[in-house]
Length: 351
Image 1 (cartoon, rainbow, N blue to C red):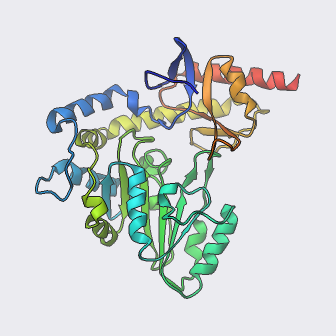
Image 2 (image 1 turned 30 degrees about the vertical axis):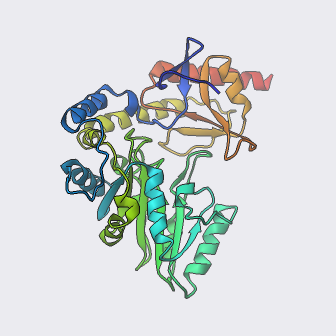
């Protein structure tokens, strides 16, 4: 573990030496983007550092409604609701939904969408079969909760089976799209538009905006009826909203994000096209994270001053999860240096 005094970008300072940095969740390099920083500064000039009141107060800042309208249109949802983090968004939504129906969380789902129903089923496939059985049996409302992507072992979950369900009870689908929103889908709009549900089912998507988009906030996307219920919840009214300056940057910075997505895709293409065959990576197209079961890779790369993601998860007693994470900040030379080291690693493994 390294203690830092500066946020990493494409490099990180360790013992006063620059290392290449291929970790974290800042896929679009938003934290160090000068254009976005300038927009945040402009937002602070207009709105100050933070609005610490309630969204229900008699003071209404226009940027909240403007950003929510933008996010709803961007994702393809009827309505959006902003909160101060993705975790809070998930907790608020599930607190309300758990009083409405039975919650069944998928394996690997973020704890924010468990609703105290810790996933009992070990594999995605067995969870899907359990959902099918329950949904097609008469009974009370069923709320299923899952991630769109497993960002650790780099798996995009398949939800095509939802459209084939013949529902015998009300179904509400909750998806955590924190590692896809801003990055996957048309212009980074995430998973919302791509899901097809059976007639009568309802979809709610939550997401942190702090990953690809680099905005310290969370969002809930879904039907107007459900978001109006959340609006009157004391857990929403009693919480401070996101800092408005960042929301101004989110709304006005879309051309910047588009350019960053384009740069990231070029980095992914360069990396994938030149990967040595002997490196065992799990990944899917156009996504910047590469998982390997070979945890020894991290130690090898550290000898060459390259830091990748490698830590035990979900508890300190678990095995290391080792990944390479690309961002739009990386240069062609950074990618080439990483690839060169990977080729050396494969040669050393063969000998």
